Image (cartoon, rainbow, N blue to C red; front, side, top):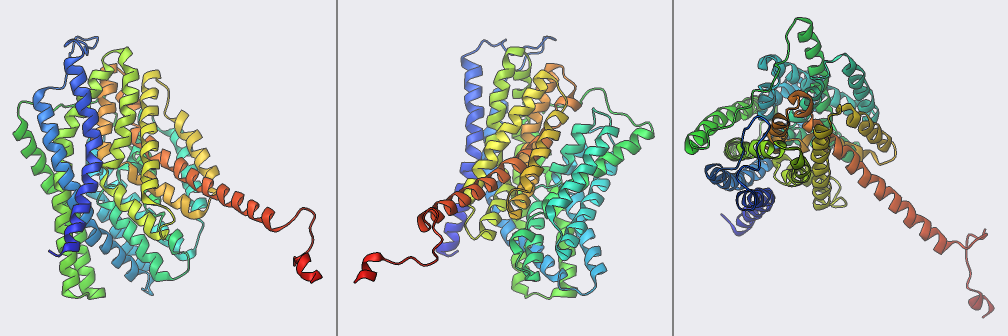
Length: 531
């Protein structure tokens, strides 16, 4: 390995380390405070259940942090050579095809393939009380259809903002037909489909489409596909929920929460790893097979390029297995237990608001796909939009989303009190800022709600709702929807700030160049004229 390659891997390792350590530090401080500064029976609910972070659970958490660091390092490096590259190559190839129906058919197949085996979707579908396969297939079809709509939009040069407005208006119209208990799940489904497998591919796919068109709109067109693919699942789950309710299928009365046995530490790790070895292979395998077949028929790359992509896919696979195994084995039981503890008594709910906000802030830093997105934002904007600034804004917005969700669970009001005003504000901003900010904002909403949210922050909120005695469907779920909504506001807020600063700078420049009530076009120096 040459020196530059070694520095590259060290950089990725450092990024992953600084991403995972903050949330680990919060848990360690919480553990030390609750263990040594509070009585042992402090966290006991009305039923007499006592909750505490055990030593075995914390040992597992510590090992999981190390696994997450190495998993994120491998994943972030591997996706640059594989998932993003595959999406870019296929997107660039499809846009050159003269048969438009062939392009749409291939796009639909790709959308379904990258969605039906998304790990986040598998987690959600097993939790919502409806047949898992029905949910997975419906959402896969929804993503495929909206990926096709995204390609048509790019081809016809349609305004992305109007499409967002139309489809979200349809979704908010249909929600009044949905069982209120199922409504948070409908909006959560839009966030979990844009996970670590889907996002790098869709970002690369959009970049390949826009680069090959050479329309001068590459920056605008390279974003927006991920966001459109988040709307499809929302509409699909709303429709499926209406159909299933019509056939008599109901929701379970209580959420079947299972806490892993802390005394069987290594057995739990092996069980989680076995599941993820299969699930991640199922996620990446079909896409790799599709790419190889498509490449042999239509592209014909060099064997070195194919080998680099296959190696990158393998690195991505190993990294994602490590990451998902770590969060489901080490992070999930900790998150659930902390939620149980803080929800056990009313006076700890305010602690939950603050600690939940910290989980949201630091959880974004540890989302693998977030780093893929912010890299593309900086690249497409040619460095004018700094990735560090975007990451900071996303982290703060995510923390505020978790804070608002815990506030809602504490006071017990419907999620539409947040969603309707939030989306109205987001669409007002969409018509005040450059289009690229709107596309980036909606993409960021989907990406922020990745595996760290679904396997750490969401279990924390579910554990909180269970120990509070609240309806889990109403006040446990809905977090992903909140996390997906907040970036729409704050990223476009960045755009509005940039527009206002630019206008202010132009106004100051005009005042320096033009005197008040001055109609002259050319200004002469009086002293030079007299000479």
